[in-house]
Image (tube, rainbow, N blue to C red; front, side, top):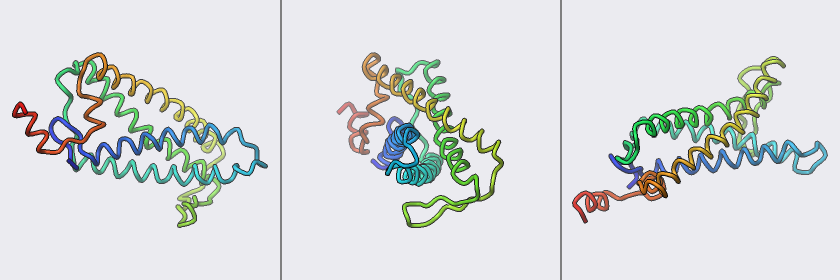
Length: 193
């Protein structure tokens, strides 16, 4: 139930998937909301601190997810998934995974551009590794902005494809990422039970 099988995702992979998805969507929503705040708004500093700390934790969560993926390979595609859909799914996963890394990295560059670290909920600071030029900071700001909305578009396409496979093709793609299957349930199904 914890690990992936040949035809299903385990609880750890499912947990990483949904935790990262919710964190990414939450951070993009928080970022979109906080850019409209003025310096004198009481939420200005708090929202920025929350956004920075959560972005660092997202990067740590992503690293753990990638480590788990190496240790516990994902299942193959279901038989209903066509070859061109498999190629599209692989490309989508590469793009989403790149975004999961690049979005927090650009945020880190922006936040530490003047040499100050990032406070993680008052527990510890993630230090600034180096100062960057104003031009590099501006590039990081632009990249962070466009990546945020690019991620939203990718997530919409990803979710739409999952719903299409579930509702139109009647495939197992979405179910596999929602419901962990215990080894006994898998054995029952393979035995026709």
